[in-house]
Every structure is written in structure tokens, then in C-alpha cells.
Image 1 (cartoon, rainbow, N blue to C red):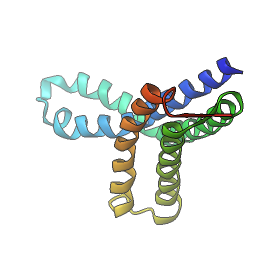
Image 2: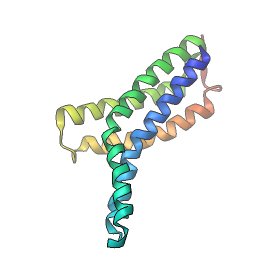
Image 3: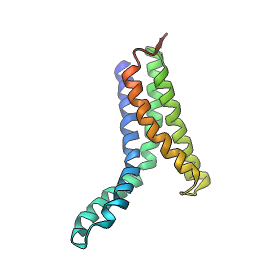
Image 4: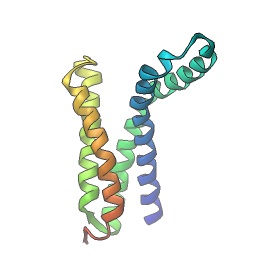
Length: 143
């Protein structure tokens, strides 16, 4: 069971990383790729092709990450107990997920405040996941 929990934790991390690439690829495109000279059109095309793929699968990667983290949380809780940093990271990840669903499905204003909150929490989640991995053994409430 420990191995399955670890697998789902890593699926969650990789899904989150792929979803987070959406921001970085768009940012790099805006700041650097758009300003490249005409003789770099082939490179621009390759970059934008990869970016299109990442943008297309951003939502799916977020859904997979969120589901994997729920399974990871359940398995780890059943096996070892409650990790306080893990619980906090999971809650923030689900907030990011819920705000993304709200923005995409209900609000649809891609420049609204929900986007800023979604991004801010996404970057906070990086710190929380690192903290979780580093301090879970110390801040674990055993069953």
C-alpha cells in the first residue's frame, strides 16, 4: 500500500507540474518568443506547438493531479496517519482546482480576480509540497 500511495503522490506532483507549465510557457512566449527576429520562425513554431499542447492539457493535468492527491492522501492516512503539511498542501491544491473549475466553467473571465488567486495559490503550493516532503515525518500524527 505504501508503494501505491507513493505512486499516486508522484502522479499528483507530475500532473501539477504539467499544469503549472501552462503559466511558464505563456510567460516565456510573451516576454521572449514574441520578440524573436523573423529568422527564428522555425523555433517559434516549434515552441508554440509545444505550448499549444501544454495549454490544451492544462485542465486535464490539473484534474489528474487533484484526483491523484486525494487517493494519495487516503492511502497515506490509512497506512501511517495524518501528515499536517500534506493536509495543508492537499487543501490548497483542491482550492486551486476548485477556483480553476469556477473560472473555466462559471466565470469565464480570463482576466478576473479568480485567475490571480488561482496563480498565487499555485505558486504557494510549490512551497507547501516541498515543506510536506521535507517535514512529514516530523509533523505526522500516527494512527
